[in-house]
Length: 186
Image (cartoon, rainbow, N blue to C red; front, side, top):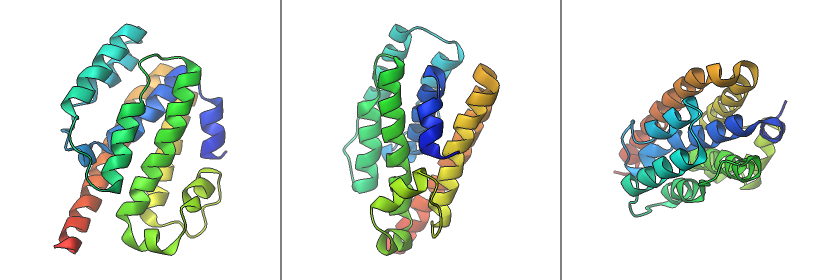
């Protein structure tokens, strides 16, 4: 099943986790520490109400309210800014879908060779299941996004811990990619 199809079938919790996981993996672009989004993860684990989610979201925005740098950082800032204060399926579906595309674009941008070789529509194609010629960095991000949605679909709330682990691994990969890019640009 393609990523687009998984997002279309996800429930509210799956959509919230999907969007949050994409944002969490991109936190290094926002100069955030590994724990900055933990209260939002806790909100989903506790199945806290919308007000609790909204409050924790505003706190995270306050901590990550830095200047947008390059295009990758700007994409991460847009993910954070677009996070809905409400947790309706409609709002979350739009956000999860946008976060999915933005996170894949971030990984494409960090893989300089891939960004030069393919067009902007390559991200949309891979989300729809056409993965030939994808760079390893983008392919790994796509696998992480699919894994998060599959974990929540198969295990419900119990899949949240696995989704967080997938996100944590992805954050480490993104930090390594940023480090390589920094060395390359020096």
